[in-house]
Image (cartoon, rainbow, N blue to C red; front, side):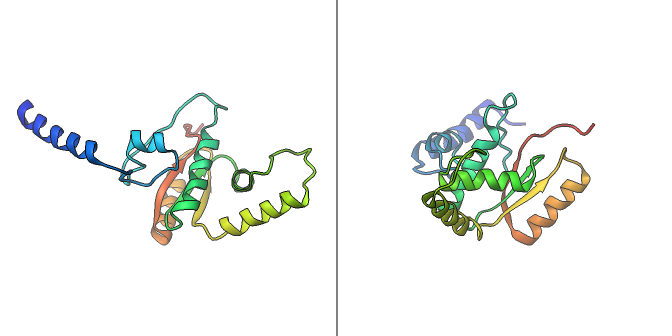
Length: 164
């Protein structure tokens, strides 16, 4: 059991560390306000971003991944989603290239150059996809295997829902 006095001492030390920190201690997301508030995405912590459907959680996660590809190529990421890897990759390529994501777009040479450049930048990045419709034992085993083989530092789980 700890007294309030002991807890205050520990808390005050942490507060002093927080006041003096100049950059995120964890993995920087590329969003300075988010990183300042969260001190980065820290290993071993669970950070939950929740909202109603269709408000941009997947887009935000993909933008964080895109920001990581520009800053920390050694940070392996596993993205778990019920979207298939083709759809997620398509979205990531449009974010990285800045090319409009639309089925009625006629791509110009300039667009194709930007897409090709994005492909060349992203293809070596250690990003892995796990398609799921819920977190179960099989998904957890896949996550453990991928982590062991590729030293995954960030796990992004998109659209958690209980199994039917």
